[in-house]
Structures are given as C-alpha cells and as structure tokens.
Image (cartoon, rainbow, N blue to C red; front, side, top):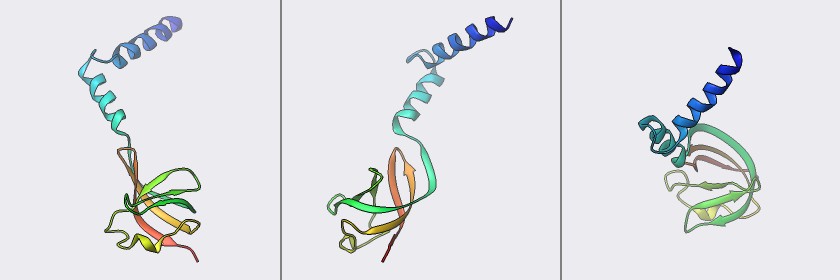
Length: 104
C-alpha cells in the first residue's frame, strides 16, 4: 500500500502543476511568477553600487534595494562604500526599503 501512495502523490502533484490543467495550478503559477511578499526584513551591509535616478542601491550581498522618496528624500545622503542598516519588505520579488540608517 505504501508504494502505491508514493506513485499517486507525485502523479497528482504533476497534474496540478501542469499549466492549463486546473484553475488552482494557474493561480499558483501566476502568484509565483510575481514573487513572494515578505515584511520586516533587516540587513546591514556596504553599498557597492548606487543609482540615484532609479533610487536603487546594491549592497555587498549582491541584492538590489529600492528606496522610495518617502523613506529618503535626498539620495545624495548615500554613497558607495557607506555602511548602512536597512529595514525592508519584499514585494513582487523587489526589495522595498522602509527604513535607512547610515552607519558612521
């Protein structure tokens, strides 16, 4: 009986995951393409790249972070090589900064 369950479960999952097979699978596929939403993440690091026009920074972890005007109205306050602490949310696969602290 156990071997039958092992065969049926992967087969059932494959049917659900096949695009166009079920509305549930389509919704799951669409949701995963947009990306997860996670709130309240924190990180400390060093700015390795800064793009004031796009309002983005890249930290030494290789991740890009978007800094909205409501969080930091003067992106000139940041510079490459600056140590920062960020509080951010992940929304649709993008890291959206909610708080910036520039370390001295």
